[in-house]
Image (cartoon, rainbow, N blue to C red):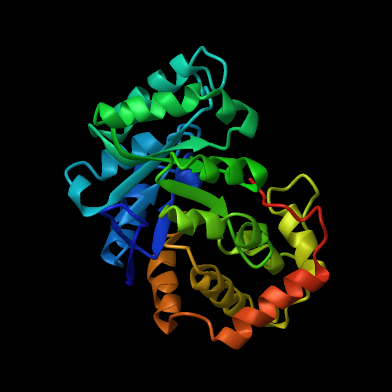
Length: 295
């Protein structure tokens, strides 16, 4: 699988990474097979978070002894069982230590602040906690995970090594708003939700569903290539990874067979420029001001 230098860091990351949100409630045997299959397919980046159920703990168990085979990203900010308010500096310190214990490691490669607001970022305390964790060797790099103007402010501080943000055929605000500035600062960029939750594959989506916003947008975007579900996945994923400034895209699944399939889709490389430009033009023509990045 193709690898890209992750911004100004020393990491060469696989263009497809594993998103750990969906395994939070899975059993250990499934996760063992899932992550083993992903590593065998050439993936070398695993992204998780403090609030993804048992995700951190399961990763730490099934990959014990294999820590040097992959880059490990996690996030902090939500209490998730700790007796503190979200974004409390003491919470962040305890959350980071808890993550390291769960992940069965003495350090991660990146800790991202988990979608906090610009207002919280401006206070500076949360950033100082991450900087202290980096100085203490608990993380090699620090980052921000989020979208919209919150992410833009985080990038403009110049204090972060990494940005994790939403980008797909139904979520393109970041291309115009943030990516250029992240590239100027040499930030590594991880695209989350890169296939828009495959929302087009469903005839109906409840307005309370996680994928509803993308489903509704795609009704208006009317991309012809979505008529075939598998072709849609391929083009959507290649679109995200063809966007300048993106280094890797994280996809979550509980299906161990999905990883070889996704790796095969990416063998075709970047989208033809004409098709990429067509998708961008459709977005600009059909989109509205409330089509902001989805956190």
